[in-house]
Amino acid sequence: MAHEAVIGLECHIQLATRSKMFCECPAEFGASPNSNVCPVCLGLPGALPVVNRAAIDAALQLGLVLGCTIREASVFARKNYFYPDMPKNYQITQYDRPLCEGGALPVRLCETARSFPLIRIHVEEDTGKSFHPERTGDRPVSRVDFNRAGVPLLELVTEPAFRQPEECGAFLAGLRRLARWLKISDGDMEKGHLRCDANVSLRPPGSASLGTKTEIKNLNSIKGVEKGLTAEIARQAAVLDAGGRIEQATLLYDADHDKLAVMRSKEYAHDYRYFPEPDLPQLTVDAAWVEEVRGRLPEPPWTREDRYVDHLGLPAYDAAILCETRERSDYFEAVVGAGTDAKRASNWVMTEVLRHVNARGLSEREAALRLPAKSLAVLIGATESGRITSASAKEVLEEVFEKGGDPEAVIAARGLVARSSPEELLPLVREVLAENPGPVAQFRGGKQATLGFLVGQVMKKSGGRAAPQVVQELLRAELGALR
Ligand SMILES: [Zn+2]
Image 1 (cartoon, rainbow, N blue to C red):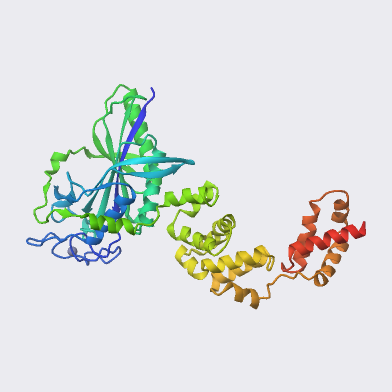
Image 2: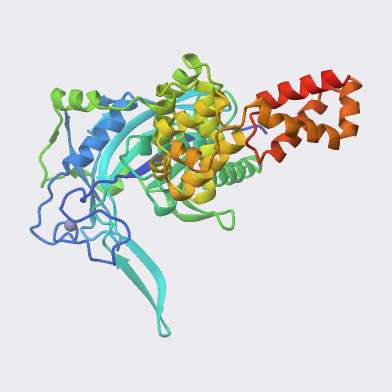
């Protein structure tokens, strides 16, 4: 029997604020266990939370760029449950009056522009982290680290708008790019900066009703989201095809073994006894704050991609690669701004610059420091005008990415200005013609492509310094004269 999957996502974005959501403890990753704690994030009696303004600012940036409605007076709520890594026995979150509602994330999927609608984005705090079992001698022990307790999170809930696991993967990749673009999160899924739960149900294709859904927790990579959902869709289909019923449940996906395990039967909202957080006033975000944030939002990545295609005439493929990170697309724009043709700048950034970034393990920020956009524009200009050859340009890039330095200085120091005087090049051309009677005969026989081989031979003799345009002219002239 055919089935249609209906999938919704809950994504948690850990914010890159300096301090935690409700106290002054550092929110950094990697400090020694239980060193970034205080009475507030340890939930000690009498300690009172204070809202971190930077976290709300980050939520506003994300909400506005996604076209959400911002609630002027939103409310924090207590979500009550016991968990050993949550010292208060409740989590401060938002429930019936979240900060942001509605909106959508535009995503390009197989060259098609899609837009996936959101239900809400709200602000909350993270829990600590437990490790178990570890061993002390022959005794198994559990440990808990509260450094993460109270770190700010945004929870973004989508409409059940996905039908394919691949759509979810593309959405998550788009969300990660956006979080980094806005610089509100590092978005590193391996470090848990971006986490995702998915709920999924099946129904007959075209049906308007929804089947019973299950929830898959802690999908911690884009591949994991796709594989976990694929496994759960297959499991549900097999149950339904055998005449069975789907039980509501929360599942854990084990990416290493591609297996799903039931964690607990599904809980309901009333299990959490939500009520408004009595220690915090309502959160007021006035129009002036919203407009101030809107005024400093960067151009979103999807708008840039469209602009590169529509106004700069780049292929969609180039636009997508250039807009993968804000650093890269800013760099590309600076190269174009320095007078380089857009397609030419795109080729150089996508091939030469990214090759060095990857091969040397540089961040794109470091790469831009070693080779500023203006210098790349100068180098491209020198290559285009024939002042240096493309082989020399690559030599310059090697040195600049290796040791730093100004490309012009490298060109001068290494004597890379192309040799273009016919008097200097003619002897090389004649040598090559004398040494290659076979290809010369082939060219005479009408095989034009042989000329490229002969140009290459002269280039080789010149150590890559001969201007290829001049070499070609000289070769043609000599071959004509020999005829
Ligand atoms: Zn604290």
